Length: 199
Image (cartoon, rainbow, N blue to C red; front, top):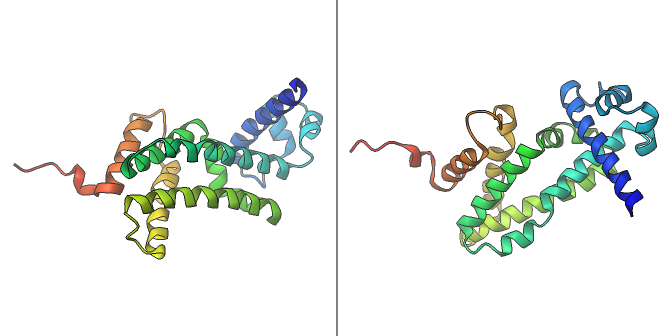
């Protein structure tokens, strides 16, 4: 068991280092030597855990999506109202981005470099996450939205959440908590909720 845990920790360490290099240089331009240098391990050490660069990318994305899905359904069961569930999903998503920024960016930009079989596995995990969020939104809307509109609403929320990578810096002046509140308020109440009263 300890040997297994040691192996998994080593793979996670390599994945963490590789995710930063992939983001800096791009997956196709990154070499095993680049990853070895970033992980402070020999090239032979990399090949001991991963036979190819593609396997490293798959490991990173699969592990990240497992983190995204882990315990989500159970957590939502313990939250009573639809609005609180939406707030929880937004806050949790941004918190995960804060802790796994490089991995989250890779999911958006490099997943297409996986072989089709492995890409489909990642896509299925994304689909499961999407459906969980869609179910929460459907509950919030009391089921009154059509399937097509619900899909659009769900993608709109993911659009707000996923594209923060292009401008948001978690260590900047806007905290993850503050950003979560902004997205929640705009998504559920509209940007007008931030308009100052003239009275």
